[in-house]
Image (tube, rainbow over all chains, first blue to last red; front, side, top):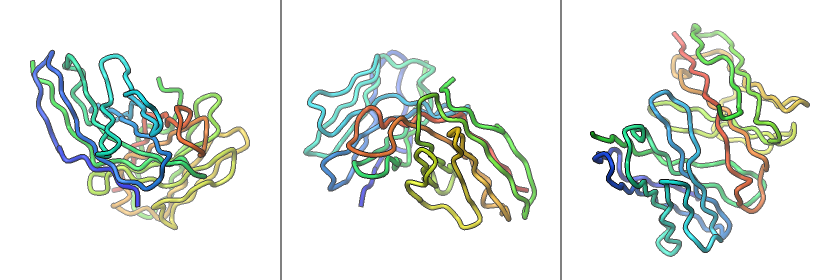
Length: 115
Length: 118
């Protein structure tokens, strides 16, 4: 069965420093996608970055990069130069090839950026 | 603005009542998803529609039902409400509804409908 694990319930980081949020996944499907979403205190879910299982290079979107290690089944999110506005809950999610496109989510990591 | 519109944003109702949550997907997206987020259960997939047809069902209670209309908007109906149904209900949409994973499978979420059952 597919599963997403986020082992860090909460993290602190100093403003302007880089931070890595951990995510491991479990699937036997060869085709899958890995996603990161941000949920600020206002509640909306904001898409950050996507990595496909066949993508050769790690995905990057501005200050966000996804450290994809297929053999280890990990998809860690790296946020460079943290900003106060990065304080939020971060969710790792996965979908897999097939007739449905539903996402399964991890339990999330609450990131607090300190000035 | 994500392009996915959910109404109402907040809803307070009593146990035993029925409510309807509405979702308009992003322009061009054919698939709609409903998720429930609660403190104890986290983000739970409820149901997916693709171009008007049910595509996948998750942990959706029998008291809940949904549909996607020809104009692609969707409604989630919650009946015989219980205290435990209090949650944030998200609608999301995507271009594709399945197949090999690609960027076209990215789900765009609405702002959510916060339901409080008293």
